[in-house]
Image (cartoon, rainbow, N blue to C red; front, top):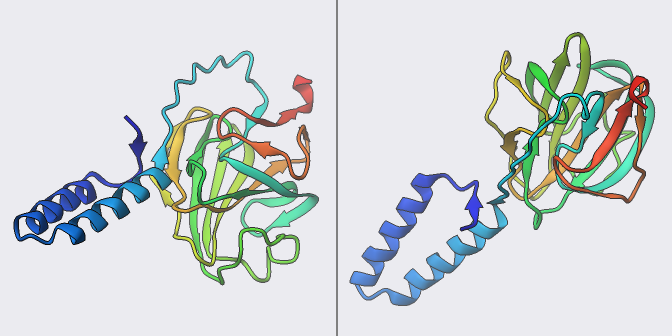
Length: 219
């Protein structure tokens, strides 16, 4: 059976409402609600991962935190939360793809910050937006023994806010599901300069499977 990010209470409420409508002969209304729920269930589907991580073979490897397409890559980027001299990788997450968010590498959540600002289309490039005009979304500062990787999730104009199930101080292994992005949006990954980017603009990536970068010492 397909798993979904829809809360169980929504499922229970939908079933209850449909039964009540059916009992009072509002059959078409019940069918419409059920159809809408099934559509939403598929759009917010959740994949089942069975990753068996081998720390030796994945050491120094950065996996894609989400599904989607690489829209832009910029070097020597300064970020007000994560620091300076980062490589910025912009990933566009479409609404029709599985919208889970996964840790790109084993790390601790050092900071979780909600950002104010404007919403914008997920296909927009960010090189002139970050900094003075931050978009609506979340910043996650990931730390592994002093090595910082930044993860920013930006809300699309017609999307919803990201739902994150971790808090500062939590630790997780690489490719662990830490939340989801309803109907998609833009995901920004900030990597230290000692990582080599293996992919390029317009490449499609799969959450927890596509290798985005590797530490230069592990080449």
